[in-house]
Length: 196
Image (cartoon, rainbow, N blue to C red; front, top):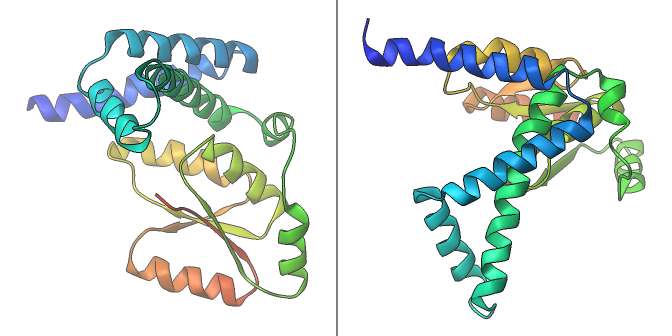
C-alpha cells in the first residue's frame, strides 16, 4: 500500500471523527472552538497567510497596514468558525439549524418570483455558511444545488446525506448538470450556486 492510499482513509477517519465530536457541542461552543482554531492558524502563519495578506493588500491598498492585518486576522477567525459550524450543521437536525438563522433579507422577492412561475437562481460568493443556506433553501423552497464530488471520495456519502436531509436536490456539477439546472428553472424552481 502506498502512502497516498494510506492517507485518504486516515483523512476520512479523522474528518469523520472531528464531525462526530463537534456534533455533540452546543452551537456556542462550536463557534468558540472554531474561533480558537482560526486564531491558532493565524498565529502559525505559513504560505496561506502570505497569500491572503497579499490578496488583502491588492484589494485594499488604501487601508493602513494595521487595518489590513486586522482584516487578515478576522478572516482566519471566521474561517475557523466556518469549519466548526459546517461540521455541526451536517449532523444537526433541520430545526436546530433553522433556529440559528435569525433573518432572511429579500424573501418576499423570492416568493414573488416563484408565485409568477419563474425559476430563480440564488447565487453569491462563498461568504458566510453555505451549509446553512442549503438547509434553509431545502426546507423553504423547491430547490436544487450544484454538487461536486469531494477530493476524499470516502466523504461523499457523509456530505450527500448531510445535504439531502433538508430536501434540497443535488445536481452533479458536470455537463448533464447544466441541462438539469435549466430543466429545474423552466419548472419554476430555485437553483442555488456559488458564484466563486
